[in-house]
Length: 413
Image (tube, rainbow, N blue to C red; front, side, top):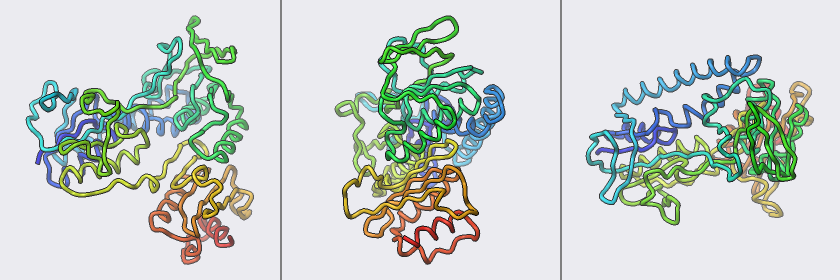
């Protein structure tokens, strides 16, 4: 069977691997290079920059990050080659008679898996042509003195992490009344306090209405008529699915899939083109779409089991049901643990853990910690296995360890 995968980002690479391992001849197409935004412009680059920026200027950190990205991408390419997956750098279009790929001779295929990814939302403001976006970071970033970030979601907070580590004066403008508004209010407020203690300039309940170029700088005009003068303005207001080339199969301007990620009997879809989310979700969707394209019957229902992490310092990690979802519901119980609750051996700074229970069953968790990604993966596993709080006494962690302290605290509740 011949499978065509459109888009070589997180979802497309995973779909290609799975389809190849299941015996299909796979053609992978992307108008850019292998890796998409995921490897080349956003997710992986930001993580490498956060790792390398401390103690270095932007240009040195960029050089190190680009080297690691090259090695990362080369490993992916080697693995694709080892599985005999054919890559074409070309544009893809769905036509009235089928599909079209410029300058290739792929021929007919049995199934198509759309992994077109996403693109930044462009704010409707005056001077939007002066904005920089996170997917341009590796090409446009310089040794600035000051930067304005529009938006304080996960993307904006990670951008702040990069710039603040480079000792660049950073303003964050957010139209809502708190940062990280997609997270629970306690997570937002705790992290806002952490940023304020680092002299972050956070402007809430306000919005950018225009950007003007003044010499080599930019003047950012806010809704309350105040102004900020900076060297660069980075827009982090969100992403939208990339529908380029597939407009003909949209319904009400959306790509509609069923629970098996099927668009129709020939086309499946995965990743941000379905719903803009995280690379983890894109990968599991790519896996499921490939299996279903090959005749399996896998249902995508993992969203509450997939953790996401904001790679700041400390990290912010969340999995499962949020407190916002269950307010005033008496079936749920919430346990909160902070660094002041830990024993003296682990009197670490900026530690916060919240566990959400439903009739003793662990159904959600959120963590702020330098090791939040490790801790949340532990709770993600507990949620996936339907573990109850009362069953934690059977777990025996390493002694001494932060997990021992967490479990001792939870056993006492």
